[in-house]
Image (cartoon, rainbow, N blue to C red; front, side, top):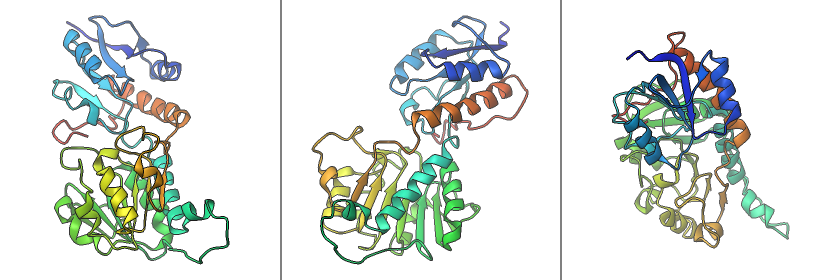
Length: 306
């Protein structure tokens, strides 16, 4: 069977911006049939639906996912086809959001927005601070650019101890603990895998300084949420800013809402409007690559899970 490299389907449907991006790449949109070789899957909540489509369409050669993290799709990555995700696509807004959370925590904004009296004088500066960033993808690349004026000492924690541009040093995940004790800010920007699930629990928070701040723009399940609540309320750490939670959405009345010195944003580091435009670029790039007209971007390594 010959697969038509120009035929692409988008499932579930209803994303005109993505359809336009596919057409602009020179592709032709089609209902699923035996000649369709590329699929853009847009529903994070339905990995089983994707698995069914793959089982029913063995001719598929390429699947593009619109999410930076593919933890929900671990059970389909074994299919012998090429998968790409949106890792790196949303780096700018997510890194910007992480920096905003860090600066707001350092200036005790959670306290000040609730204040009805003059209060104490306090500020923690990013200038000359010791920073630990867990993860070495596009968000970390962008965050390091944004942190460069602050003269920070930055440790990047990743799976392999290869140099990372802009970092003072790069260490492997099993060396994380020895660098936490000196950190003024800890940022999570890693993928959710079996090695990072529950990575930050109470024991790990206790390795941080009482003056240290914690920012999570990765996945909620990288953190034990109730242990984070304990770390905040018992002042084991100074504060936390999280754009992702476990569970998510965070239920009304959850103890994290009322924890000390916390900022919770509702997974809005990248908004729908930003995602539509940025992911459209990734669609154009990878459909061109699928037809042999460019380089692949954001390919998923099934072994690593991201």
